[in-house]
Image (cartoon, rainbow, N blue to C red):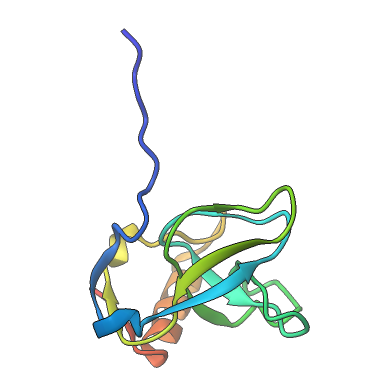
Length: 121
């Protein structure tokens, strides 16, 4: 019998958010990025496009900007996406970090999210 694997669903990590989707921001995801729902994202300073957050980046996206709302596969070019960037609560156990993230990286990102008004529970 085949085993089915289900990916992360859009917004499944959200505990609560501000009324009227005020917590969300529509934004462009940088070409060649593949984001999962719940992934911590940074924003490239020169283009304002989102990519996976990594403190080793040097284009502005080394700073935490928010959390990807839904999966986005931009391997074919820039794609539209949505990120939670303010005033919400998220399930910290369902957040996605870059491959190889250390406990220190996770703590740093969680504190940065808190500074944006995104509380990990």
